[in-house]
Image (cartoon, rainbow, N blue to C red):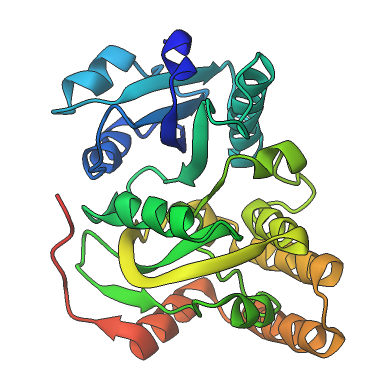
Length: 292
């Protein structure tokens, strides 16, 4: 399969998976794009039953190229993501560098197991980055949804670089499974920082913004699953502590940094269940039909 990556692709979808094959399949089925113009890189983070390329392909009507990196033991999402980026960088170093016209892949996109994309998500992101060569990192708005209860709420985010930079002092403006960035960024930033447990994406995006520009499409192009057993809720307090460390390190405005840290400390005092209720109360939307 590695030889297939020698061709030029618009993007690679980077996904990590640990014991969630059915949710992974659901996410892959939501991707709508020319299957010859993208590929999926899945890092199997030590699943009890190893992922099978054959099983995945059987569930997809028009399967793209699929590469599975199997890790022998579960090491967490940061290590898994970095294994994926290392794979992409290593292939680039073998002679098809990202920056020339024969690039292996132009953009890297993220998606998490269980999350869903609208039919036009990737088309819109690729077209936007093609039209705006000054933008390195691109996110979208998203809807958080509990697929069991049907409850959902919208995640609002500014779309222009200036407001994004200000808001990053208060929260991670970019929801991880919505982002797409230029593959050339990984030559400058080859790995997610591993010193911010459960906030590695916040730190990585802040690092991109130190030398690059960002934007967010003001459209809801991803539905992110609310999972009570997910990392964001299970390790919420540790994640908030890591976010404070990220703001201290990368924040460029002292006043915003102080206010951002204060906001995060206040959230630490709110129990996870109440925090979710507050978000639903403020941003509640009617049940919606998720993309198939």
